[in-house]
Length: 123
Image (cartoon, rainbow, N blue to C red; front, side, top):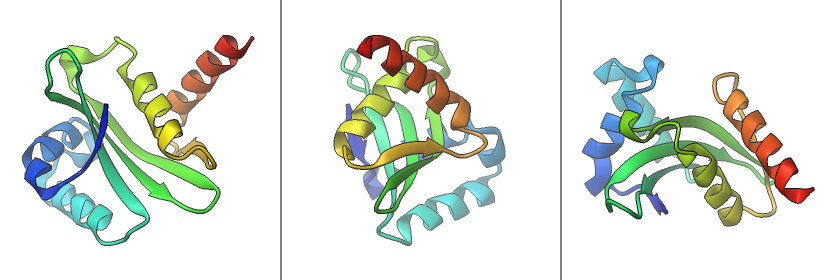
């Protein structure tokens, strides 16, 4: 289940974001969190596991009228290969039903696989 970032979740958010290669440096990570918190159209969501009730994933987005740009996605290594990223994207789509979800160079592959899955389900 997606939950909106709160300052109470800063440590776990930083831990999950630090799994992204570009965000391993603590200064870069702090800058990125500040960037998300500086504008209303930038959001971080955490994914809470229904099984363990722990936060196991994070996504960072940038919103416009027509699109949701997926800037970051990270999942605890213990939960990878379980389809969590696709669950997160389906939940994001429910939050923003009137906007198209697109990715950056780094996240476009995940979006493409998710869209393929969606297209198969629609057939």
